[in-house]
Amino acid sequence: MSTATVQSIDRAFEILEALGNCPNGMQVKELSAALALNKSTVSRILLTLASKGYVVKNKDNYYRLGMRLVDLCSFYLNSLQLKTEALPFLEELRNQTGLIVHLGSLDENEVVYLDKISSFNNIRMYSQIGKRAYVHCTGLGKAMLSRMSREEVEEILAVKGLPMMTEYTCTDQKNFFDELDRTRARGYAVDEQENEAGIRCVAAPVFDYRGNVIAAVSATGFIDMFPKARIEAMSVYVKKCAESISRSMGYR
Image 1: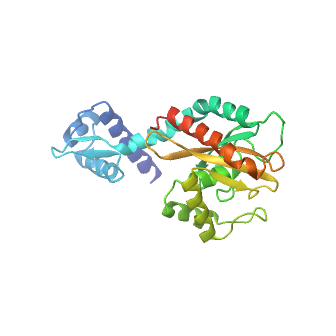
Image 2 (image 1 turned 30 degrees about the vertical axis):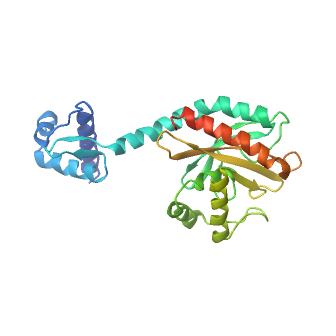
Image 3 (image 1 turned 90 degrees about the vertical axis):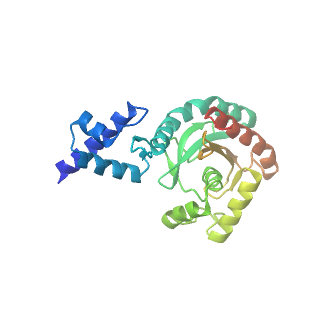
């Protein structure tokens, strides 16, 4: 059974590679001859690939690569490019605000810290590159969720819930969606000691060339050095940083 499964996957990749070398597309009989596979085998694999969007068939029964492959490539390229493209903007944000700056993305319904630029004050915080956090109580998480559909957010909350991290964490779903509405309207998220007591954070979403949210950037500090009165001013810098990173990722 395992050998047959691996073989079918191997054949599917052979078909995709053959189509990749033929921009005008290929018919079943052409793929069959080129790969020395039975027509029925080729047809069955193409049907499966087409159902997932990896190949498309035109009216003349020619198969070409589908847009789903473009999506996968963009995910991969984004992960490679994002940190490199973001670094100078993250450093500029740290210089402008004097706060700790984070870059994070969503992975398996959690925030993952991709980069961290320390402040000049050497503030020590929970966050570390590669560390994970809940989405509902972090500025990064709320910034990204605010640009997702309600259905997508509900799916994440169904898995992760709204656990209380501090006395300030929002644990009511209705109130949480109200907060996402406010976040979307003003263009930035605020973490008011919701993930760590004594820590305040402002974050804004980052988009790719297709307009999909792929990450978020934040400025974070202790509440004594980052009082509420500074939130509006800091949000201007944070949003500008996020917009700059988005443009570097092809967003227009």
